[in-house]
Image (cartoon, rainbow, N blue to C red; front, side):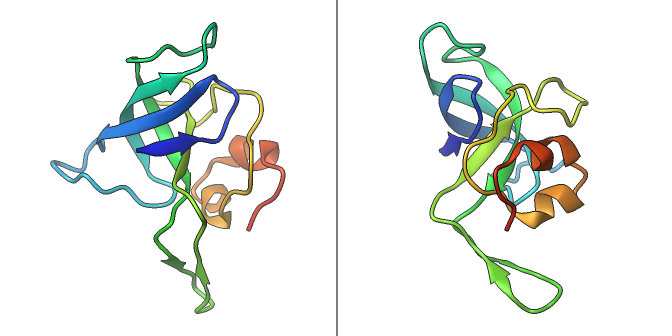
Length: 118
């Protein structure tokens, strides 16, 4: 279960699967996954039970960087993507910090909307 860090109206998403990764059920920072929306605000862009694609922007599990340092966050969070093959977010705002690895993975629009990048 992941928190949602954008303004689409979704609150919680449950990971269902990871495209092109077989039966793996663990996704890492910057990976796109398919998920089911478990909680959503009323009258929002997305509805509870909807199947969406999302990218992980914060994770509790630490990630080692090239310089030898580690980055980790207090929660697992994701951003809902607009379509199946796009890297554009569906929402117009991102809440909270995101990892630098998101920008490096090619999600420039998400990085530009985020208030801070660690």
